[in-house]
Amino acid sequence: MRKSTLPFALAAVAAATAAVADDSPLKDLLGATDVAVFGDSPYGVDAPYGGATTDTTQLAATPAFISFVNADPSVSLVLHVGDIHSGKQNCTLAYDQNIYNLWTAFSHPLIYVPGDNEWSDCHKKGEGGGAYDAKLGTIVYDTNPDNSLTDYAGGDPLANLTLVRQIFFSNPGQALAQRKFVLSQAVAYDRRHPSDAKFAENVIWEQSRVLFVTLNIPGGSNNDQDIWYGTPALTAAQIQEIAERTDADIRWLDLAFELAKITRAKGVVIQSQADMWDPEKGPAHQLGFEGVFGFTDSNYGFVQGVHDPKRDIVGELAKQVGLFHGTVLMFNGDSHVFRSENPLQQNSTCVVDPGSGLDAVPCSNDDWLQHPNVYPNVSKFHRVVVHGSTPPLEYLKLTIDPRANAAPSAYAIGPFSWRRVIQH
Image (cartoon, rainbow, N blue to C red; front, side, top):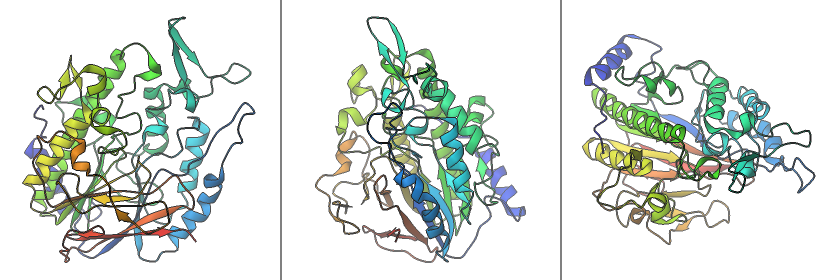
């Protein structure tokens, strides 16, 4: 893995700025905070050509869900872990704009990280994109009866990520819904890597003596393992996208931990979309390009100049957590079903939703086995898969108390505790 740490000087400058700015994204707020975390919503199904019935149930329920979150007097911040629609819905400008408009009704700042369904999977036929026709040697796009393209830009992932940025991140450094300043990678990027300025969605802020960081790590297509449009090989554009985003994420993660050390944060909260330990996909699929390019544990990280993104990121995460004095909590969506565990430690306490409401049962597998065990066992880490995609809509209520030091469990660790809240 390449060394990708941002210069210490940049972290020092950001921390110094925070010390003098009353409305700084790194201003240290000492009191306890409650945060509403949700994702993989609103899900539905498109049927534009008279097939199965279009399902907009969750979309229609979203205004009431927003009011439900707003009615919680203790919540002061909202996090969305990605996927603003399902993998059976089209990627369109109108839909993305509609979600943005709905979110303006939140009475608290909202921090959103993009998921795969709204950009990296838009090329897929099931989302209205296209498919590669080997006989024709070209991409055949899903089109409306009038031959207009169903998906924005024919489902091109890069164009759809640009669209998401234009709608949801048009003011880098400012949260959605309500005024809140955050530190964006679009501004605080390493000048030696100018392409990092693209990543306005990667942000950092501090609250209740905890540093928050978002990372654009899309799941579903396994962080770009699925070749765009199913073409015979990765295009130069996809190879470049994988490399730039993975390196930018690692540099941003490194900066977050530098800042956490400087500000003496009690903990770090990481917000991303991909479930990097999804047991259903198995180790070979989950580790990026292994099944496609023949990676082995001895050469992980690069094959013919191509990243193995999740393995790179998990390795950097494990290293940074091991060097950090505080507690690290990670939220992701992608797998849809509530799961709570430490996948960086073998045989950690783990519970999962069995599909029967709020009750959780012990996990039947150990996600520690889902990545190469070259990573050491790392304590002081916990991750939660946020439940989503199925009605009724719900959020995870995270309480941060910088004075607390809870023993690791399925619902608490260090300054953090959480519980699921289902819309009535």
